[in-house]
Length: 431
Image (cartoon, rainbow, N blue to C red):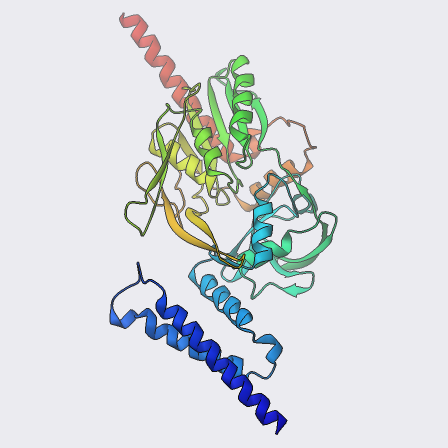
């Protein structure tokens, strides 16, 4: 008798709550919703509400089926199915995301993506635990602390990689080139990677030209000012042209990328625009005032150059300001908006795509180089190993014979300098 009464009470409770839920749903404004009957929001919401009612009423473990649990689960599934970058965040996740917008965070220093349903390392950040341990681009993370990554979404994986500084994390990694599976025990550290490194004049230029080299590892708040300082240093040494190396650069702040472009193009130049579904909500970013450098410029990119680094490469290419050398970039060119919910949770939703000055889409396409120059697996391994062996704060001399991409970029700039010198000589003799 007690059991029957309890069941009846649960059914009444469920029906009353579902009636309330449906009343709220049907009272919602339908601005922007499709009016076509075949995609009616009302009909589909009835299906969702009925399913939640049945689960709440009959699922064997009633502790797992509160309406909050069911709603959060539904939202997680909805957002995860849209694309790898959309996400539902519970209140604690939302708070953590807000903390992660700081310039420092506790983590392992690996940039990851999901490729073919496998959690894959795009690039390890330099001077980070993952980089120092020997992790390489393309490595596949099979387990995190013994837990399979097979069903993890990208945001869930990032959450597991980040955390308290000093905590130990073991990554089980498979290297596709060798099929070797290995455990990497790591300790989370405060990740703060210098964004501008290795500023120098390339050695042994055959024609005596002074070609500069600067590497940008990511885009954070001080990147543009740090790059300007490095440029001034090389200009004092007589630099005539520059190779800007953004290989393995995972991106960062959009504003920083625009400011970096502002060092090479006039003020007021449009660098990137965003466009979503809603008409009239287009947005563009243009350069601000400041000293503009006019020397020949080559930009080095590869398959791991993503997001803000792609915006810089695409803009300088489209504007005819630089020759892009290397490989087609990663293809992360979408905008995620974070919308707070009334209960403290939030929805991260892909709402727009980036467009280059020539109206090209970056997302899922990447930026194609003017001069294609892929590295062999052996060359890439040697390049990463050389960077890993460099002590922090050092500026190692570069060897163009061991970096064919850098060599091609230097060749392109050398040709521009020679052509420019000949043009000046011809103009002088003709005058």
